[in-house]
Image 1 (cartoon, rainbow, N blue to C red):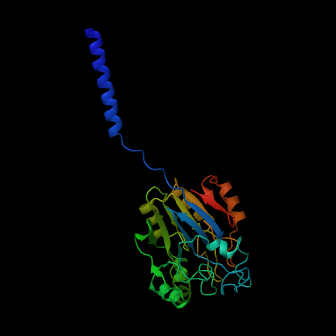
Image 2: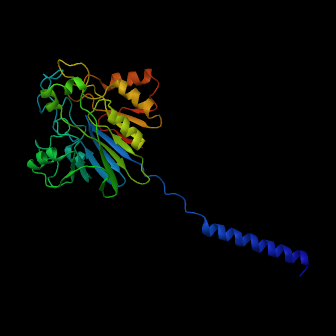
Image 3: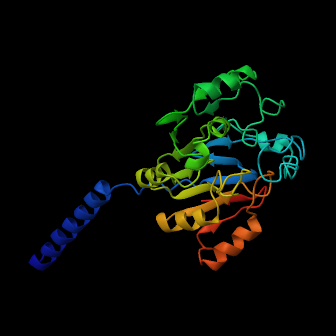
Length: 295
């Protein structure tokens, strides 16, 4: 064999060896992100499929007009809910692995009034007082949600807020009625972080949650629910949607809790107009009842 040929053969062997070694040591590609599906049912009720588990958040499942309006609130002569469910209760409950109740006001939990939610389903609440109430209603697997609470690989964290402004909470009777309401953060490997703020005004604890978790999706209750004799709302409103878009510029905002309960004063139609006027329509989703969003 000629020297030139020998040199070429050696070079080829070295190249093939290096290629083979690189192939053996190259890291595996990162697993693809798992999409999240959120179906807006009605009011603040959501069905979220997250990291292989399906959660029903704040189920209000009664038919239209089942309950009287909330006393002391705007338009209390109207009966709740204002609209029917967009599907049957059987369809709502199909495939649900666990229920999360952010607080036990009737527009977020009416499981003591019907048998639509099975009694042995895992059911997460914010504290022992709510747990005791739900257990009295016959539910047998009631769990208190805390920090880094695991459910089959999904990390759930309770976060705070305030269900009304300081003037409202200075009134002892109203404070007792408003009570506490939690938010919830969903986390799992390869899944976007989802933050349900719950029934709260914009409060320092909301800022803390945004800073701590940097959520990819922020679900806000934005119906501007009003009490008679008080200024301001007991939940968020349109200005808070803009605030969220500015405070979390990489997140998608989902606005719910409108058009279904007597004391809501902001409609989806009005919010859509506001969102368009402020140029944030690409960032904000305002789902219809029954609509499914994918993130």
